[in-house]
Amino acid sequence: MTRIQGVVVIAGLCLVFAAAGCGGSSSSSSGDESESTTSTTIGGTQVESHGTKDVSSESGKVEIELYDNYFEPTILKGKPGQMVELELKNEGNAEHTFTIAEQSVNKEIQPGDETETEVKFTASTELNFVCMFHQGEGMIGALQSSPGSSSSSTTTSKY
Image (tube, rainbow, N blue to C red; front, side, top):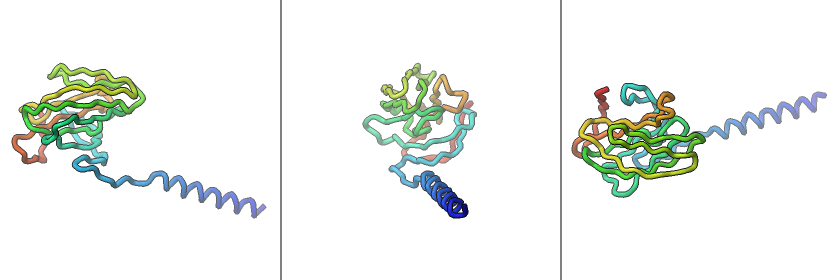
């Protein structure tokens, strides 16, 4: 009986170590995109941030992935008046929208699908985009603009 108990204990320990190995950390960084999830305030709502990308010097399409209840990256930084073509990819299991009411942008994207839209960074410091279906769960992002090429660490909102 003790031999069987020993085998069970060893098997259990192997499972514990295997499960711990599956939850490894991803410390890779890709340029100016941040992979860490932190909390930020957008439009007066606290949301989980899934990265910030500076697109002020981008000339091609900028990709935003829509997951279930968040955008990645959550914040795009650009220059006032800058036009950006966004490639929106729904990587989640639910239907999502990419909506900017102030610019009459409202794209519905089915799971696994993608679409494109153009947006313009405004002179105001922050313009919010949301998923109309999951805004209440914190699916909110922002276009943040700052004059010139200097990056400002303050994020103010008129909301």
